[in-house]
Image (cartoon, rainbow, N blue to C red; front, side, top):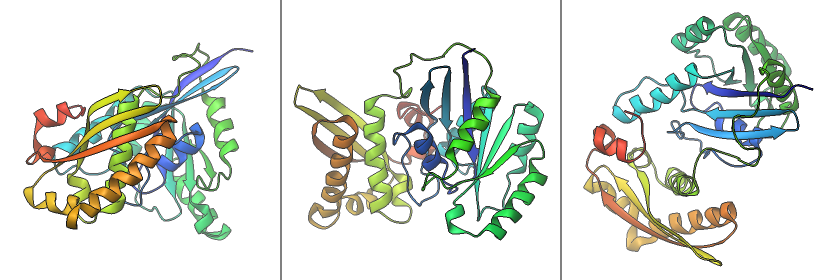
Length: 292
C-alpha cells in the first residue's frame, strides 16, 4: 500500500474549539485551551503517524480583524497556513454563524480539499445540527461536512477517514517518532500563559507574554526561570496580587501541568517585567518569536 503524507491546516473563527480538536486528533495537549478568544497566538504543528500515513496538523490563531501588530502577526500565521496545506480542516460550531468571507473565498480559489467539522454538537440537538449542516453546505458546497464533539471524542474517526482520503501519496515529512515542531521551552511558556488566561480578567491576559530565561535539566528535576511581560506598570500589581498570592497560584498550577507534560519534577521561578506596549513593538514581537 502506498504511503500518504500531508499538511492538514486547521482554520476557523475564535472559540469554535479548534485547539480542543487539534489535541484530540493528535492525542496530546499541544495547544492551550481556554474559553477566552485569541488564546492561540502561534501556529503549532502536531504530527500523527500510522503504518502507511503521516498527518501533520497545524493549529492556527482564530480568524480576526487585527487591531495591533501582535494580531497582524497572528493573521500572518493564517496566511502561511493558506499556502502550504494539502487539506484544510475548517472548524465551526453549533453557535457559529459568522463565516469569514475573505478566508472562504481564498479557500475556494486554492482548489485544495476542505473537510468542515461542526463542533460542540453535545450542546445542541439533531434538528439544529441538521440546519447547521444545510447552512454550511451552501457556504462550502464542495466540502465534506461532519458533525462532531471534540470534547467527547464523538465522530473523530470519521474526520480522520475523510482526511486520509484526501491526502496525497508521499513519504513522511518528519521522522516517525516526532510529535510536534515546537520545543519543550515553547510548551513551557504556553502552559504558563494558559494559567494567566485562566486566572486574570479583562485586558491583562492579552497584555501578557511569557519568555523562558533558563531551562536547566538534571536527572531528577528541571529548573525553569520564566518572565511574564506585561504592557503597563499598572498591570504588574494585578499579576502579582495581594501579598503575591495571584502569581503564586499561577505558578503552582503551571508547575503541575509542566511536570505532567515533561514527566519530571519542576522548580519554576516566575518574574514579572513591564515591557511597555510590546504588542505594538516590532522588535519585541520578533524577540518573542512572532513573524513580522
